[in-house]
Length: 188
Image 1 (cartoon, rainbow, N blue to C red):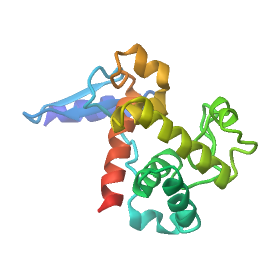
Image 2 (spheres, rainbow, N blue to C red):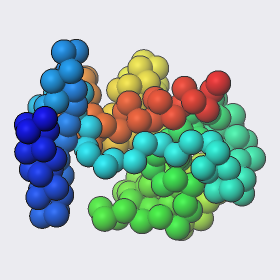
Image 3 (cartoon, helix red, strand yellow):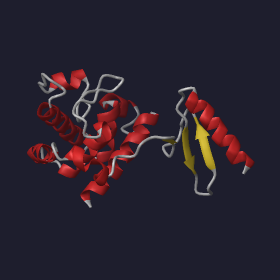
C-alpha cells in the first residue's frame, strides 16, 4: 500500500509539472510507470478514451449522414471513419491541435493541400480529404488497418522507417488501439 501511495504521489508531481506519465499493469498485476514509454502497452495517464456513443450523440448528429456518405464514396466502413473522427476531434469541426492539425479528421496543412482542401475547418472538405487519405493508406499498406492508422497519425515515412511496423512513438502506440476500440464499439 505504501508503494501505491508513493506511485500516486510521483504521478501527481509529474502531472503538476506538465510531464506526461504513462502506465500499464502487466499480467501479474504489477503497475509500470514511465515518462518515456518503450512498450506498446503504456497509456498516458488521464488520456481520454474515444467518447462513447451516448456521450457524443449530440456531437455526431450534425455530421453522421455526411460521414456515412463520404465513407461509402471511398469504399470505407462508415464506422471506421466515425472512429477516426471520434478519436481525432471528438466530432468538433473547429478543433485545432497544438501541432496545427485541424477539423474533424485533424488534417495537417500539407495533407489538406494534397487533396485540394481550401478550408480545413469545412466539414465536407475535411471529411473528403481525410477519408480519401485513409483509403489510400489502406491501399498502400495492403489493407493492414493498424499500419494505415499508424501512418494516418505518424506519417507514412515513420511507418516505413520502422520496418512497416507501428512506430515506437507513445502517441501513435496509444492512437492505434484507441481508434480500433472506437471502431469496434461503433460497429456493434
